[in-house]
Image (cartoon, rainbow, N blue to C red; front, side, top):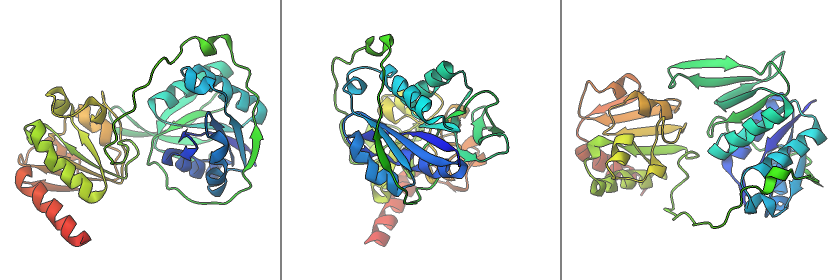
Amino acid sequence: MAEVLVYVDHVDGAVRKPTLELLTLARRIGEPVALALGAGAAGTAAVLAEHGAVKVLTDDASEYADYLVVPKVDALQAAYNAVSPAAVLVPSSAEGKEIAARLAVRIGSGVITDATDLQAGEQGPVATQSAFAASFTTTSRVAKGTPVITVKPNSAPVEPAPAAGTVEALTVPFSEQARGTKVVSRTPRESTGRPDLTEAAIVVSGGRGVNGAENFALIEALADSLGAAVGASRAAVDAGWYPHSNQVGQTGKSVSPQLYIANGISGAIQHRAGMQTSKTIVAVNKDAEAPIFDLVDYGVVGDLFDVVPQLTEDINTRKG
């Protein structure tokens, strides 16, 4: 069976959920070979093996932390040359998409970004994508070279499938460009204790109808009762009510959770583009004609200031 190269997203050896989802998809089309880079890379092997990696390539060079994406592209190219995979899978983050695009240029292959599903095909992997602000669903495959595919978080289940997970050190010849852009400082992101927005299984968002930064406490309370991430529409972010890092939409982050709850959000196409692939969508809006209701699985026509506190109280009561 052909091997499939999977780029590992981890923090000091703690493997992030989108990588485990990639291993599930990789097993559909071949045998997963994982590439882990930077501090703690070797520590990822046990988890990766538990989820299907037959081999784990590692390199802990300091260049991956000290410089921007080029060293990682160099490493992925070195792994590609060593493995000759049937496909390369990368988590669909901003950095992941840049790494994938640079690799595709180097190896003369096509690239597919933001896939939401992946299946084996007679002529290579077939990816499912949402196109034109999620108005259409398409299936496509790379016609030239080895497919390089980035996959959105929450596109596949995390399924344990124990494999050998043999660890091998990878020798990476860094290019001249690898040290061209140095990271000179870092500011740790303040932790909210909530899941990462793009990886969360549940997202609770607020829009213009929240009517003020102080009222986002209602959205946060509902999110916390569900163990969810908090999102915001562009209108709410532009008004300064919530940080841009939490914006969901075409000019913000794209999410695909199991459950998306939109509160006081009209459903403009800009917002829909960032959340329309959610598995189940619930909306609370006092305007019965709001476009968001054309999209939802469940809609509540009502004032969010009445509905959201009642919903939060009910969830907390049931949990208790």
